[in-house]
Image (cartoon, rainbow, N blue to C red):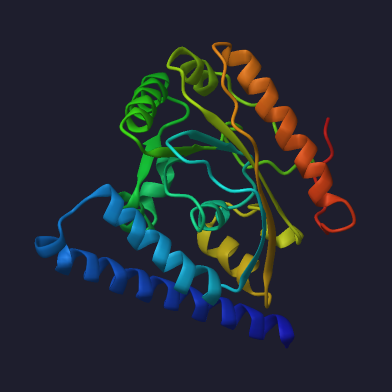
Length: 255
């Protein structure tokens, strides 16, 4: 009975989230002729929605350590759940590099396009190269970019090996990198279901979602491999600290 109530509660959350997103986007469109259409305003729209509606209504309890830096940078984070950007963008104004499939999600795609997303077809080399060029252009124009260098969801205790391309591009262009670690308490928070709606109901049928978020120190180097190794090492060290006597996740054992 409790499980059924949880599923119903998750569906109610989903409907309310969609409704408020539509209202927020309608407000933005309605006021754009007067206030203008800008990245800064779009980020403010997203940040306020997450702070006052998204995170509180979904009852996400975030234990945060550190903070984003002043000035534009490339933020690299391990990837656990579709909720990762919700948690991160509560504190960080950034364009998010997301897989192209997200463009097929109703409402979410509309909101993402309005408030900052760079879509990539990870299996397509030309798409990856184009997104990396856009990433550099975006950061040099003064905006943050958030990327998940594992390239997919990580279900292991530590990260999957990071892809090198993003770090080489950052090194070649003198970009600052900030590593970020994120971890959840419950096994249901990891993105294990291929169907987005099934995953949402599974993840948000419980009363509260507990997550830890740690921002690291700035990394700068002309050596992309060093940037990758340092980012991966720091995030894995933080994951070990986060998981200790806290997480209840059944991780996939490393082969």
